[in-house]
Amino acid sequence: MELKLTLNGRTVTDHIEPGLLLIDFLRSHGCFSVKRGCETSNCGLCTVLMDGRPVLSCSMLAARAAGHSIMTLEGLQEEAADFAGFIADQGADQCGFCNPGFVMNTIALLREIPDPTDDEIRAFLAGNLCRCSGYDGQLRGIRRYLDSKKADASPEKGGSHGA
Image: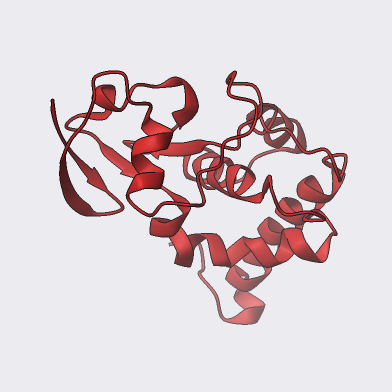
């Protein structure tokens, strides 16, 4: 069957088998940030954005993405670079395997809730499995990133005046 979708801002058309999973389609198109972890929709390593919303590509048929926009970390490098360093500074990327899923879900979170509470951050990232850090480092990194954005926007720093 023919599949046509937008992948990281470009139109992609390919012939696929009906049972192909979205994760396999994405990896076959060079999106290696999308990782296979549990294969049971429980770890978040395969998270991508479909039309701006996080979805688990390991449990979704590629055919369901037809006509939609799919974004992977490869397509969001600039946006991700803004806060990935804050997470690393908190020691939350010990092995790094879970980072792409955390980054994708954090981007989705900040698009939906620009100034989340710690509880909102925890709830939004609850589907991401991290075996190294215990999640506090990710929370601290996201919080420090948000605090730095507020400081950059403050009138004393020459930032926005709320207009």
